[in-house]
Length: 229
Image (cartoon, rainbow, N blue to C red; front, side, top):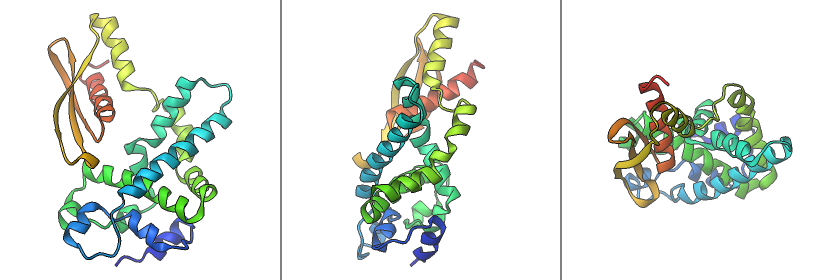
C-alpha cells in the first residue's frame, strides 16, 4: 500500500479518517483486480467533490468580482474546474504517485489519465469536505486551484472556443457550425464521446471528452487551428 501520510504532508492536511483520502484515489479498475480491497471506488466522493468545488469557486468569484456579469463569471468558473485544469493541479500535487489503478489503466498515460486525475481531484475535495468540513475544503481549493485564475484571465484561457469558432464561421462563411456525436463508449458513469464539428457537410475537426460539452469545446479548438482562424 502506498504511504498516504506523505500526501497528507504535501497538501498540509491531516485526515482524521485517512481511509477517505485513500478511497479518493481508488479507481473502479483497481477493485476489478482487487475485489477484496476494504474500500469502495472513488465515484461517490467525486460526485460530492464536484458539487463542493463548484460552490467554492462560485462563491469566490461572486465575492471577488462584484461588478462582473454572470456570463463572465461562468466562463471563468468553467476554465477553473475543467478536466485540463484539475488534472494539471493533480500533477502539480503529485497525485499520480498515489493512484490505485488496475495494471491496464496504469499503462494509460494520455487522455484517459488526464480524466482520472481530474476525477481524483474532485474526489479529494469531497474527502476533505467530509473529514474536515467546508472551510478546509475551501482553503485547499483556493491554495491549489483558484491561484491559477489570474493566469487564466490574463492569457484568455477562459474564452470559449465554441463561441469563437461560431463567430468566425458566421462572419467568414455565413454558416453556423453544427456538432454531431460520431462515437461514444464506456459505462454510464464514465462515458467518452467523439464529436465532429461541421460547416454544412464539411467535417472540420473532431474532439474527444468525458462529456459532450468537453468534446465539442475540443473540436472547436482544433477547428480554429485547422482553419487558421
